[in-house]
Length: 89
Image (cartoon, rainbow, N blue to C red; front, side, top):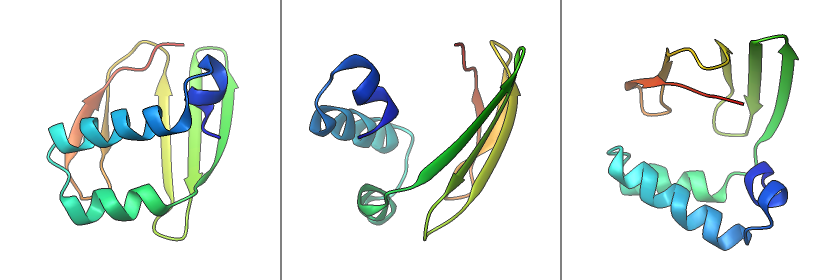
């Protein structure tokens, strides 16, 4: 179960559908969305004050992101585009 669905009691299918719509809106191609739907990545999340580090591991690709709570940062998507992200916990 994903962190989002387990934390909010939203059914996994609804979370998957919403994420698929978001990826479509961001311009992620159909094939990459279908591959992404099949992955079951594991995540390692570390927090020290306002600094966060998230490592995601899958058979397709591993990613590493570091950011500060509430501050904008650039992240590279799986298909190579740069997007600006703000995460607030």
